[in-house]
Amino acid sequence: MSPELAFEDLIPGRVFDLGTAVVDRDEMVAFARRFDPQPFHVDEEAGKASIFGQLAASGWFTAGLWMRAYADGVLTRATSLGSPGGDEIAWPAPVFAGDELRASMEVLEARRSRSRPGVGLVRLRAYLHRGDVLVYRSTFTGMFGTRDAG
Image 1 (cartoon, one colour):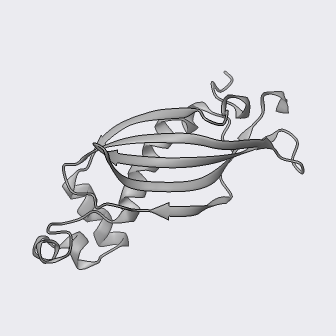
Image 2: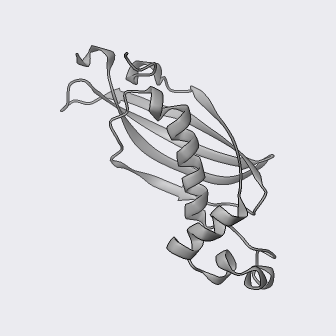
Image 3: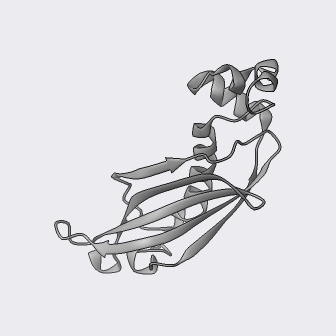
C-alpha cells in the first residue's frame, strides 16, 4: 500500500492539525529525571520556588510531545525520509502537568532536491499551544519521497 502523503501534498501554506495531548505529570517528571534533571523539572518544592511557580516540564519533553503528534499525524502515513535538521526552537511559555496542548504544523517552503532525484525538501514549522498561548515552536526541514520516485 502506498503512503497517503508524499512530497507533492506538502504545499506551502498548508496547515496540519495534529490533535491534542494532555501533559502527564509522571511522564513529565520521569523524562526530566533522565534527560533534564534541573530542580524545577523534578522537584515540586523547587518548582514552586522557581520563576515558574510550580513544577514545569522540560522544553525537550514538550518537543517530544509535538514530535509524537507529528509522527502519528503525518510521518506514519507519509513518504518521510528523515530530517537533516532545523534552525529554530523556542519555548516562549512554560508547560505544566495537566495542560492540554494542541499541536499543529505549517508547510513554509517545498522544493525538489537538485542532487537526489525523488526527494523533496520541505521547510516546516511546528507549533504547540495551550489555549491561545504558544508554548513551543520550531522550524526544520523534512525530507519526503516524491510520487514519481518509483
